[in-house]
Image (cartoon, rainbow, N blue to C red; front, top):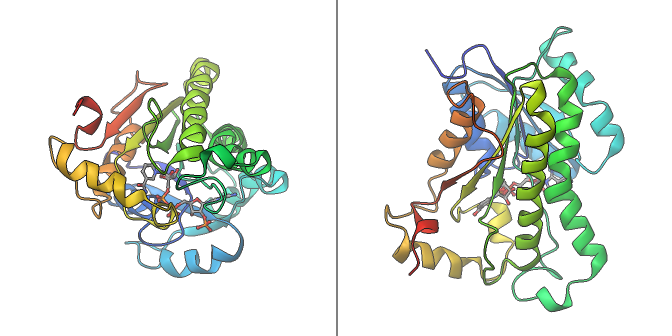
Length: 259
Ligand code: NAP
């Protein structure tokens, strides 16, 4: 018996097997879910190859969260792969982008609006876009889970992505407010630093990783995505029926320490 038995889950944002989305798809399958994954653009071919490394090869959908046509066609794509009466019990938003050349790694004061706008659209607004695109297929009891990096404080190097995460965290609370009446929960997992493509693209991200190694009470393995993936799956399951608008920290306890 798995905690996601009988559920269909879309994990959006899987490129490599180092993606948090990949680890989430794996745990979701192990917990009994039927999983679909998505990515966009040139990396779609990589995603299709990587998908074969999951316990069961999932359907791979094309979804650029900034493309209105892709969003409008999402429900049909899911039906194509999961059947005419398909439902989506859970949606995982594992997506972020900020131009590393202009916005990250000590570029805060120079960040141009056009790039900031793109970062906000891809990393925060898209939680709303993706949720609304999936909503026609979501039954009462549905769950949306996104990934953040604690945006209550500023960090070295994280710069405009930190601002985008603050917007994501607020978007999640407003979605929770709007969708609660329909029985749909919206929550985030706030993960500590993990070695992924997105993290590698941030110049100076290793300084954050070093902080975790000394301050996290439980310790922190930045190559182990399983604790984060398990928390996402717990929030997707029926084990958190009265939790929404919440941010669950999976950071070895770092957020609770002052020094
Ligand atoms: P990742 O493997 O690079 O995943 C990010 C995904 O976002 C990629 O699949 C990327 O696709 C996709 N993406 C970018 N723009 C998109 C768009 N317009 N439409 C659809 N998908 C798009 O890195 P990750 O670390 O697993 O990131 C997953 C989530 O976890 C992000 O929200 C990230 O901020 C968050 N997070 C990461 C850490 C960490 O330390 N790694 C910590 C806390 C939270 P392409 O690869 O094709 O660009």
